[in-house]
Length: 422
Image (tube, rainbow, N blue to C red; front, top):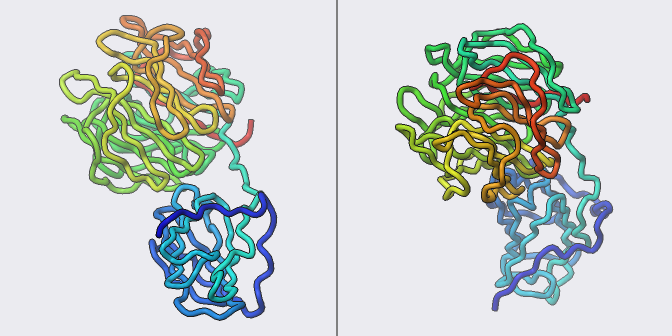
């Protein structure tokens, strides 16, 4: 006999009932399997993997076990209960018992052989804290055709400021993303020599001097936030295309190269999506000017997935940014001609077909989120000219018409969000 018992939630909010006296709380569980004991409480952390929880094979009426979603990730990686020969809510242990709702807490009590283990409560904590959102943004570096290190700040209402004197080595074809929730990092690129140096950006938009590079120097790579407060640099060109990545922790420290997954390419773009910190790399040049539309999803632990068949017009030198709090948008680029088409990305990482373009067609712009849930595309080349125009994106993914440019026109620059303060 088989079946499915899922999410038997008796209330949408509340507190786990008080445990019986003598309950002993155990260290946080991160493994994919754990055997639990009566009179104990367990925090189950499924951030990196699902977990199968094996209950005791022998129990006495009144035995109690508490299980808590430590990181609110059961909705992504569920727990499975193995009742180990005893009944669970009146069903034998051939039944599959999954709990897959973020924030659940289970208070399991053994009632006797007939019903077996039963939740005296299996509620969801209603107090799910909302992470603060990034309000401002920064465009930086690029080519005019002179290598630049100037930056332009963007207010929480999408207004671009005039040039700020550059800090750090002037370069182009670099990457940037938010880290630590409210700061940003620029990294890699060419000067024209290839570099792996980085420049951190404070939560007030101040760019720091060069930090000695970690990982393989390359150009034409891309970066995005993942896991809500970390960054991943990925792909690029070292003289030939690569698919390696470098993770950045939430204090801005870059890690060594990670072996690449997916098709090696450069001139791609990336952004975060989803409510728990996933990301997506997409499009690019796979060699000798051959464009692609393939994508690679990134988990909230920074693991890059294999290629996903491309959707939309294959192109390179496009830009991408998060919008709407949990979605993303790819836009503009070179498909053999300059274009202004966009492709929306759902909060599950699914790329939509082409959306008719708005604004001046161009390639090698930059894009970033701002104002909590909106995005901005800016700068780029509408060959043979270089531009500084911008296009704002609403929190529903609608691109607006051109906004008169501010600051030095350039292309192959980068952008990222920063600051929790509007």
